[in-house]
Amino acid sequence: MTFTDEMFKFLNIKGYDDLFSDIPESVKKPLKGIGRGKSEMEITLESEAVGSLNRWDFTILLGLGAYERYIPAAVNNVIMRNEFITAYTPYQAEISQGMLQALFEYQSLICDLTGMEVTNSSMYDGPSSLAEAVRMAYRINGKRDVLIPENIYRNHLEVLRTYTTGVPVNLIFYGVANDGTINIEKLKEMITEDTCAIVTYNPSTFGIIDHGVNAIREIKGDALHIAYYDPVSLALISSPGEYDADISVSEGQQLGIPLNFGGPYLGLFSFKEKYVRKSPGRLIGETVDVNGKRAYVMTLQTREQHIRRDKAMSNICTNQALMALASSVYLSVLGNTGLEYVATKTMENSRKLASVIDSVHGFRTRKTSSMYFSDIIVDVDASPEALFSYLQKNGILGGYPAASALAGPSSGIGRSVFFAATEITRNDTLEKLKKVMEVF
Image (cartoon, rainbow, N blue to C red; front, side, top):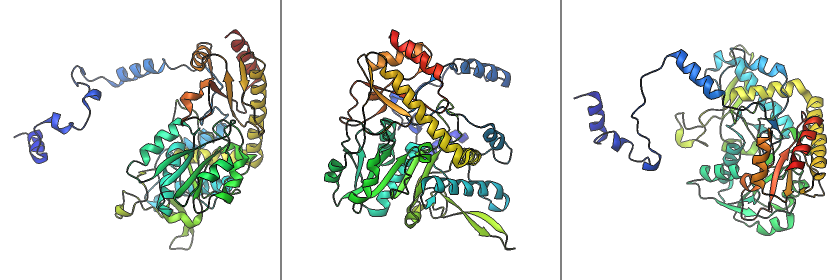
């Protein structure tokens, strides 16, 4: 009897087909015709050929959570050091003091940025941070109704639904104003004694700075306020801590991490200290060693990989240590003044972008009493999909259809598209966009 036969007998199955019986037939592919193994050189050449199909020459005028920003050379210089090249939180504190200290500093920097009391040592990305925040809110108060804006990002909603499978929470949409900001009166009417949490975005998913977040504390009652924020915007606008959010989360890609065709990214996750034992992931703490010298350790790390797995707060298996380090270097290099410059320049360029778009017939930025930060929603007379395709053919990534980006029953998007500006958006780029759009 072969080893394979013994394995099948032990599992009480007849063969490989039974082993993979839970996989739908529609997604299975035959393993025949794989061919011989390939050498390192052949694999390298083939990989380069595939990689060459990627386009690098696009003018990027698109955001929706991931942005092209300038990254100081010092960021890569530090994170490429051999001591730091890992995605993992180190387990052996006695030989990992440098990495642990770096993550401790990361936690401190994000607390300073957000005005929150505690930050964990990172999550996978923004959407998973939001989903973990909802699960954490349920652990805290046991209530079931989670109010989310009807113009929530589509990918956020999909991750939320995945992470809350098996958790008895109801995701309930609340209406927003025409400019995508919170309608406080309507939201207030939806809050009940069964409301677990209220999710807000600032800037809103329409890209508009939403002062309505400041009023949540007055109407939320026993519900928790989960604030999704733009980390760069906090150099200019109120931080989650200032408007008394209970949990604040974000995508940290803007803080020194390149777009990378979609990842790896960084999930920022902060909360009030009184909720620390309900938080996911792990924290890095400061202590002293046997000689009384300062030392760093992992603490409050109740997770599924450890002995007390039945007490785990989350299913997160690791963190994004290298990306967290990159954001720490980025924030340290820029400092308060540098980050404020980046935020100010972003808003200045977004105003220029809006002005250019409004000057082209058939395109109108959504009117609002507030201001755009980076993203801009634009109402168009033509087909959003046709515009997006046309701009791509002309080397511009922008004009992404709002219907594809946002979710909800009636999120007020209509025939709309998104553009975005950052601190590196140039005047000649905007001039190029205008000429291309005038021909469309």
